[in-house]
Amino acid sequence: MITPRFPFRLGATSFVYQADLVGNARRLRGQVQDIELVLFDTPAASNLPDAATIAALAGLRDRADLSYTVHLPADVATAGRPDSTALAVQVVRMARPLDPQGYVVHLSPPPQPWEAFAPASPPAHLRAWLDAARGALEQLARAAGGYEPLCLENLDGWPPELLLPLLDALPVSLCLDVGHLWRQGRDPLPYLEDHLPRTRIIHLHGCSADGADHRSLAVRAEEDVRQVLRALKDYREVLTLEVFGLADFNSSMAALRKLWG
Image: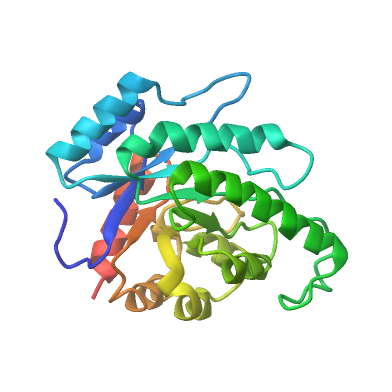
């Protein structure tokens, strides 16, 4: 059961159990308060929910202290692939009956070089990327009923500072992925201190010595995890244990309970 010591809404992904979206939500309710619906849509497979699935998820939400975050199925295009933005808009509209806590948005990778980047005066190639991102986010905001539910996630392939001009220019929110910062060798504490008021979702997970990502918190040094948790003593939004599999979920839960407080 959920321990009331956590001020935040504790979440898990929809890939903890070998089941579909509804099956995971059924088995996870009572263990967590939020389910991250991790969606995908490829030529080989798709798990985009139909109307019956949305209705079933809404029913579970209404019968329990349960909410959802929605991880959009593809990078939102900033150049050259408007079809991915159209798919994201479709998913946002599809998921709105769930009243999600937020939509996790990946932007397609910015062009290099990044070394010349300065938030106040980005070079032309990054200005073009930022302008395209603003256009895509405007489309998503119309579908979501506002910018605030859109949560831009820092990815481990490029510097998180590249999101700052968008956070300054638009009332979007942040999905702060602590695991990605760790994987980049960055200290997450300054980012939490500077951006927690804009953060609707935090992703917490470990990464192993061989570089494998989204592993159990148990593979991370306990003091690293403890310092992050100390910074979240007044956080009231969603913290998702972003791991995929029951073993990693259970050991992450055990680490969280051990290190909290």
